[in-house]
Image (cartoon, rainbow, N blue to C red; front, side, top):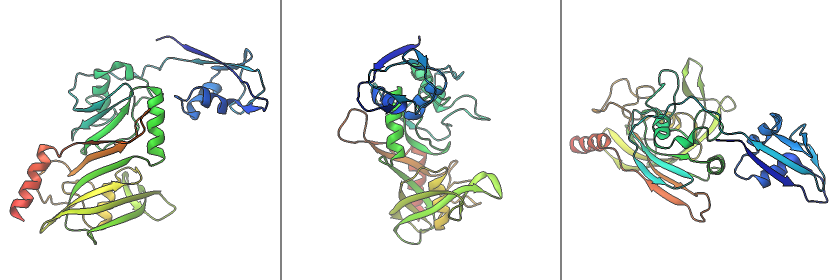
Length: 308
């Protein structure tokens, strides 16, 4: 893939900032990405390399932008089956199985969702300017369900904004031990690194972590368990798992934040991203995507219903 060159002419009697002008000319790129191109010398004004993002433009100035091809990430596409719920030219919605890590990391160099997606569509490599092609949100390894990935820079920028502005509605199903204090409610608590175990997250005092908000409601109650529906309004690491622990009803099978003794026959935690409502690029009404409970979770729920 060769370098792309775009040329624009600033036509306004009032002086304007270079980066703001480029955001209007190249809406498929985020302002941060364009500022990076300016800083790296890929933007020139009247044939002279731009000095800074806030450089002033006067009427008639000619701006040239050289957009380098995506930098190969070194990630390898793998022939791993994907449960594709929806796909168009801009994005792909996948129903991720439990046990699959979203992107390569220490101890998980292959077999990830990213490897599978690159095997399915090699052109997604480098989307987003990082080594996590197309990703705009994540799911824990043992959490199953819906995840969306962008297929081009414009869609990546759009989806990032949807998540950043909290316009995406995500719904999860969780089977928990015990019952929450109230059948429905809202959890507001700060999440940060656990000071006693740096590999874990924890609910921390306000001001020492990041805001996290979730709403929940009871779908079914049993003697020893409760099936809850969660709608997170923020996207913190391990948020729903921590909020369940905070409520005194940890998720069944959660080996990190749950009970030491597993209360059901399960080899993962019972958390599933079942619904995703999002406005797609170039569309006027949001779409809703759904993913049924995986067979292993249906089996656990049936056993709970039978014996409780």
